[in-house]
Image (cartoon, rainbow, N blue to C red; front, top):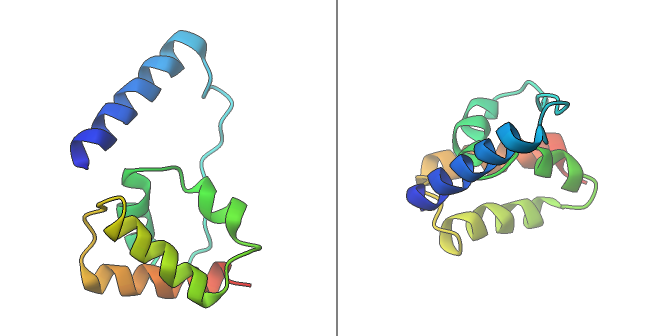
Length: 97
């Protein structure tokens, strides 16, 4: 999974150099709260944190739990159990419906 993430990051970096696609992209500012450090360290390793903000009007607490579990089980995200609990708690408290 780390290799896939690294390859995707390299591909996006190359595209940005060639096309300037990310020139106007602003950094994602998530809500400052306990667990943010775990979200930034784990989730941003494979995808943009924009997904959290874009999807936040929809997920209930159960849906955020399912999303975190899916990232680990289906996509192979290397997140340990303690971090997964902290990430889910952060998402439910700050971006749940």
